[in-house]
Image 1: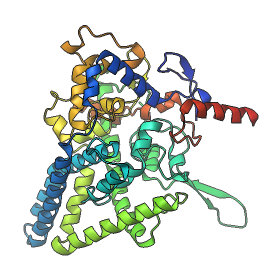
Image 2: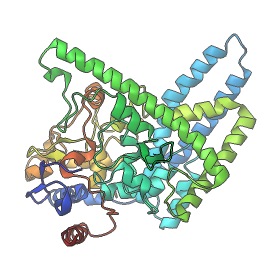
Image 3: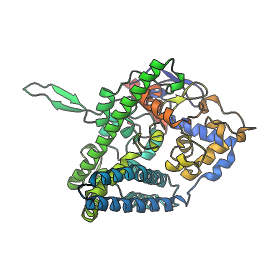
Image 4: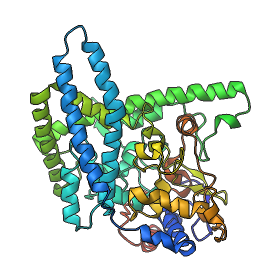
Length: 474
């Protein structure tokens, strides 16, 4: 699907969406990186592994495992009279503390993929990623191993249909798998064809995707748009603001349902993968992909069986809620999770595909709750900077991140196409905007989704040229 919209390319030229003129979002981040380093060369000193993050990951995993055992034992020991109160306490613990620990684990494992946790070769990092991603119920290993680096290369150009039908070992853009719960996606949907009853050759198409069905069929998308979300202070009157509020509540509840349902379904499907050795949602994936899924699922099943035997089902309930909680509006981390790749504003009026969320001061409580994953624009500009150093980038170069700061005095003004609109600092407004006025994923409605099989491993200009030649020949 392509639109007639135009978007200023990193070089400043307006280009039509779709076709060989596809504007690479990754190139925009690369251009920002060059400009920031030219204006502030000291940022380069932040690049490289940060030894502080590995102890944080190990400590959070140990704490998570211990709390799962304690929660399971508490529920098993609770009598009939106080079982409800004990269950409520376990759920509260799993949401607050467990959710934060799970987000910490995800954030540091994510840095492991980028090579900013330990200085080691890729095989060592993948082994650490595998074993240090436990304890989980379904976990983050599949996304981080097969979908995250490609996300940086292909941001905004892959569709759901492409991901599920692909025969490549890696996902074209792993983030598409979960942004589909809350943002419009361009391109082919994930659908299956089934023959209709009778002797005819008719077929019916349906999507087994929970996210697609809930978002496309049940969400109120009447205020959907490519611009920045409308804030409550910008509404024209009380009535319109009330409508927007109820739309945000409705959509937020539907999002919470679909995320919860899918996580439970993934946990069940993982046991099927452990038994059969195949992830049937990705039938075209190569043997290496399927073997990796099976190995991880079987190790997870052994852990789950041990926890069940040691502490009862309460331990698994704790882990499930902890893994899910930070992605829902009941946890502060949700504000970061639902806002990092919308269709925000640039200084030249163009579209910014990535955003950070600054709540409170740098290195403050919110930053620590999110383990600095809220500095998402900084991360995409500098994926080789460890998460604990990300706030330093925007402190040094605030003019590139929509922030005001004294360090920007005397620095050259960024080119308008590389500067972003004033940064978001309001958690409530961010969450409300994400659900009331959902933005297309990473400017994809403006720059177009090609569904052309581009993996991000080839030179994008050469790929675009060859794709244009193939279309011309056809």
